[in-house]
Length: 328
Image 1: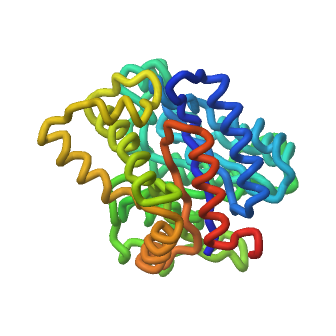
Image 2: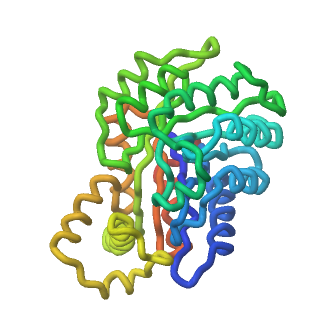
Image 3: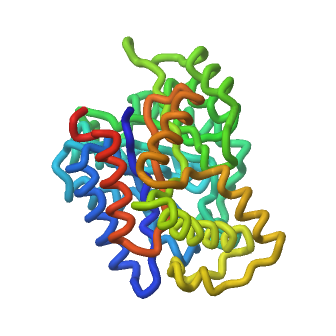
């Protein structure tokens, strides 16, 4: 099974955005050595904990810092906030700079709070009603349909649509795009949605085949106990986001263990676990295989929020070892 990484460039306690980005580059380089298939970065606005607000910029740095054995991309560009034509131009430039190495993943979210979205749009309409049309335009621009996008790179990025809904999967199928199922959005999406995507997939080029990856939260420790400690930090972060987002950095394990939670908050933490897999390497391996079989996925993409960079590096190295990625 193929494994990939979605990185949030989270700012851990005692660190800074500069350190977060250095760690993102370092992890991408390691992921390439370990045999991961692709490395994506996200788009978040007005979030003090997550440094990644401009994936197209970070993608360029990551592609320049790796050797071409791992695909680099966005997971994803929040299309309602942007001009499809400008996104196409950005990724045409990236594809010319790094041929055959770039993925363009797009999503329907705003990527941030209302005030950040309003500032980003600067008076333009960001209605989600236009999203299917935006996707269609973007796919057309990348394929040379309609207004010419320059530069005309010899290779185009692989196109991915991030979605956890039937509507999103249908948009991906109608436009001949690959589908990234957002398991981390609300837990298990319908397997029937993925099957329908495969059935309705409209190939743009002869030989194009539908591809499905499932993106989910993951926490892996050397032991089950260590994994649960790390997962408690992720629980705290997700709870904070749900309550408006007051954290400035990812808290430490000690900070989380010192906190007191209400019963309602505890229940929200339990509910959040449906969106992640937690355990030691062998346990996480079993859970990932089960989910991959459930979705009939070609690939699993893992995202985590960690209070410690060395533990984060060790997590991905351990999973590469138990899945024997370097032997694929």
